[in-house]
Length: 127
Image (cartoon, rainbow, N blue to C red; front, side, top):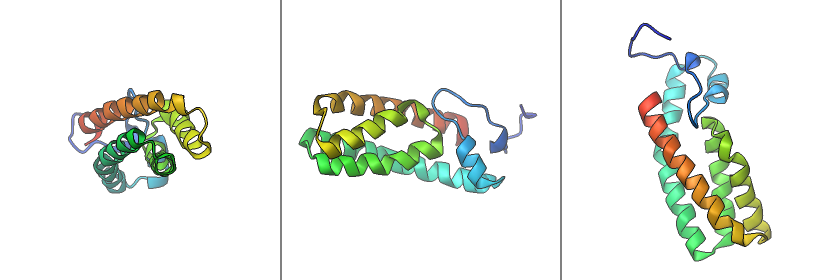
């Protein structure tokens, strides 16, 4: 990789455990400042959405849970967190249709755990 300089080029970063910046780099079209700004925004927004999804699950407010899950999907897309994309879609669909409700707590826990790991990765690897 680079010669140890601190201004890492985001276009050459390798995929790590949870995060894959290919999509974000594609839309950034070489603009590293845009990538860094987006990563900082996502890092700031995701924790409150995770808190909100947990609280909403405890309240069994399926309509609101659907909206929060829908709101999280683009965050996962930007960060390339593909391992839980299907899980967030299931949360979104199950809460909308109010089916398979018994599966939602496990899916939410998996999403929260993976996101927390991804946030640590984001902080240590990219910001």
